[in-house]
Image 1 (tube, rainbow, N blue to C red):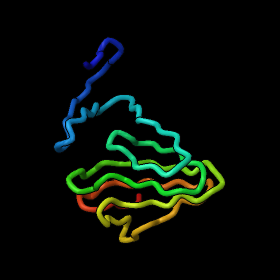
Image 2 (tube, one colour; image 1 turned 30 degrees about the vertical axis):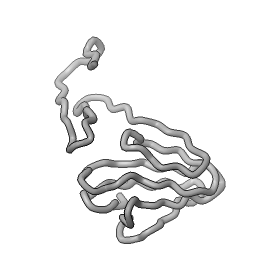
Image 3 (tube, one colour; image 1 turned 90 degrees about the vertical axis):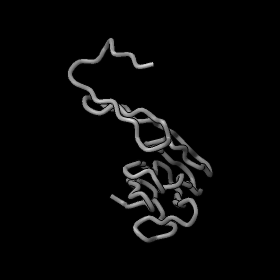
Length: 116
C-alpha cells in the first residue's frame, strides 16, 4: 500500500531486479535503520547499519543487485569485520574492517561490493 496523502511533487516508482522491493525515487528518502551489536547477516531491506562491539557483518549477495547500497557506521569501541556472501569481495578485499568511529559505504556492482 502506498500512502500518497502527504506527498507533493513528482515521484517515480521503480521495481529493482527480482527482489520485488519498491523504490520511491525523487523527494525525501528514508532508509531502513538497524542498530546491531553482535554477529549479523544483513537483510536485503537493511540500508543503514549502526554497529557497536567487535563482530562480523555479512552482506547478502551482490550478484544481480547492482546499485544496492549499505551504509555501515561503527559507533562502538570495537572493530567490525565485513564479509561477503559466496566469496564476494569489497574492492577486491575479502574482509575489510570498520574501525571504531569510522564508516563504510558499499554498493553492489552486480558481482561484488565496491567501496565508495
